[in-house]
Amino acid sequence: MIFQLLLCIAIGLRCGLAGPAEEPKCGEELPGEAGSFQSPGYPIIYPDKLNCTWTIKRPAKPSILKFVGFEVEMPLFGGGCEFDYVLVTVGSGASASTHGPLCGYQPPEDIHYNDEVTVKFISDRIRAYKGFAAVYYPEDATETPSTPVPGKNRLAP
Image: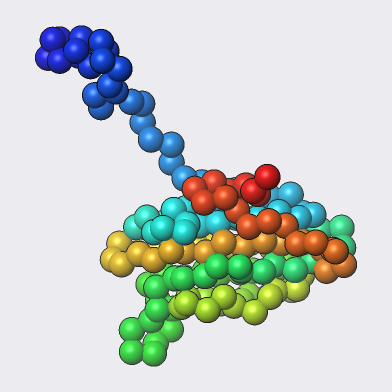
């Protein structure tokens, strides 16, 4: 074992000694003005057994949430989105409005909002797909934010 370790060091190999892999972000609190986020693993495959929540703070002016990429497990036999799904809630309490559960291969319609937004993503332990990428911005914006960089939850430079 020691000989193998010394040999690896001598020829510059890592030999499996790297630290733990960085876990993809599974939800976070996001600023209210403009930005982007994505499901872990997007655009490759999202992990099993996710329960992620992104919260977009209340914006200063009316805004839009747009899913720019969307591939979440389809229901079996035309049923509801029971296995993997996205649930969007605008506001809280009695005045909250819910969009979803959302699943399938087509991005849902844009969601217009003027309150805090919660995006919840649930995946089961069977079958995984690409997931989603989303951007949010004021309705009067002249440019929309860039889509997230694959493997990150931030905008492309």
